Amino acid sequence: MKDNKNGLRVTSVISRLILLALLILAPTFALASDHHRSILMITWRGMTPAEHSFIRHLEKLGIDAEIEHFDAGRDQTRLAGFLRDRLDDIKSMDLIYLFGTTVTLTVQNFHIDNVPRVFNIVTDPVGVGLAPSLERPPRGMTGTKHSLSPDVNLELLFRVYPVKTIAVLFDPRENNAVAEADRLSSAAEKRGISVKRLRFAPDAKEKEIQIAALRPELDDVDAIYVTSSSSFVAHSEALPQIIPEDLVSMGSSSAYVGDGITLVFGSEYEERGQTAAEMAAKILLENVPAHTLPIDEISASEATLYINGNNKAASKLKLDNTQNAVVYK
Image: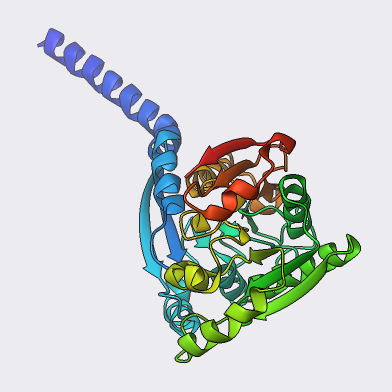
């Protein structure tokens, strides 16, 4: 009987020690298992290679995330309605991923400052007023800049194809496109290059009338610069209808390569998605405040020169003058 009592006492002591250890270690276990994150992904024109790359790389970085995806379908009113209806749920997210300038600006207007935001594929965050500088993102936000700045693009173009006159094609309804057209015009004028600004809304009812009116405008220019516009990407079939095959055309986004555009200096969407994921990991795993991470931009020397090998104008390029890696598509 004594042995049983002693055995019970020993068992009781061991049980209490185990319980005490569990109570002490409970916060540690909770922290160790708390890897599940909630991420809201808001896109403008469906999932692109940037988003697929972002998701893949998050997994490689060890982030277990439940990702809710909302696509605005290039409809700002629809996007604003979603944000109004779901604002309380959105404020409980661990992170918000934003694609493009319009989405990022719209979300910024809703002042969701308590949730870190990472934007991607934004052409000119400073030019459209998102940030005072690349080194100083707005509070609670950071992201990646997809395109090189227009003045850098013009300099790189001049190395492989010196121009005296250039047309700038932009959609006046998109803030980023207007800002890009303004900066390119200013940079060109400083170089003594004549600029012809051409407006184009490819999804408007009078698209064919616009195309017919734009073609003659390109008769007296050396090249055309196509700004980063979501409407141009969505209606890329319209670009070859406007731009003659023997006219050198430069796009500011790698998304244009293959759509009749001669050349683009930049990076792939996949690379930008990976960079955005690395930023998200610092925020989620290391508790780094988003606005302390500078907006990421590739340098001119890091940019790849993408050339549409099927474009007749590509033969006019003086590739011996470039120091960038060249990729034909």
